[in-house]
Image (cartoon, rainbow, N blue to C red; front, top):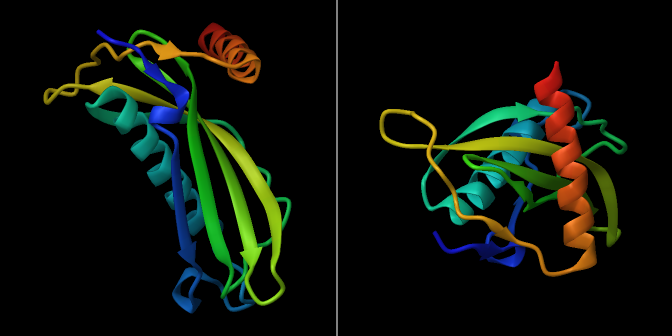
Length: 152
C-alpha cells in the first residue's frame, strides 16, 4: 500500500455561524463546534485512508475564545500519526470576526479515527510520509499520546 503525504489529506471547513448555531447569549454552542471538528477529522482521515472511518477518541478541547453569531468558524484538520488501522488527526479551531477582520485561535484537539470495512472491522491504512521536521515532531508526539492512551 502506497504511503501518502500529510498535505494530501489536509482539510479546511469554514462556515458562517448563524442564530440557529447559538444560545440566547449569541455564543455558538460547543456541540455545534464539536460536530464540525468531527466532520473535519472525518474528511481528513477518509481522504488518507480512502475507506470508511469511525471516531475512536477525542482528547479535551479548551475553548479559549467564544465563537459568536456572524463569525466565520474555520476548522483545519491534518493527520499527524498513522498506525496500522488508526490515524490521529490534529484539528485547529479558528474564529474570524468578519466585521473586525480579526482571527482568534479558539482551541485545538486530537482525534483518533479508525478505518473500517463494510462489516465495521478495522482495516489497514496507507503509511504517512513525513517530510518536514515539524511533521516528524508532531508524529512522535502523537505516538507518545497513543502509548499513554493504550496503557490506561
